[in-house]
Length: 151
Image (cartoon, rainbow, N blue to C red; front, side):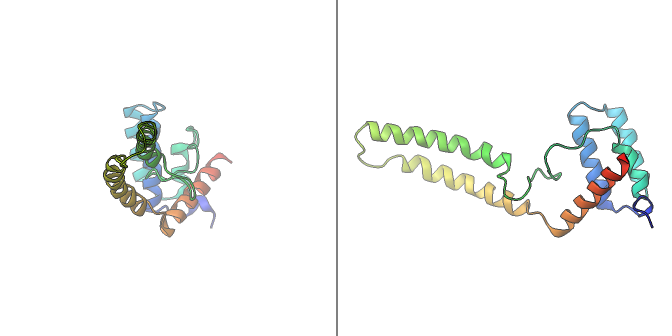
């Protein structure tokens, strides 16, 4: 049985819905077109019926999954956004501490509570964003679907 005649799963449909939402957010499709394509996605039973829904949209940049989690080994953008200000402010505090005589290490009172406050959402986000086997399989099927739709 060819790939285009294989039944699509709910996870496959959700991946395509996430891509459509992203395309609408980017301004590539309007709300009316988004709604039409959404109806096509949920009415589709096979990969062959799903392929045309995304055929005129560019592939997503990078290898991201809908949760915003980047590929393995890359620090997610949201982590950088949270921790870069912490590093910059604490670097400045360290420079001020050194410039004023390096007495009592008061920058600790800026660094430690703020770091603890950032560790909680960082740990929760990383644990919640773990790429499970089923997510990888769904992403692989979706990639195969996209490549099959262009041939």
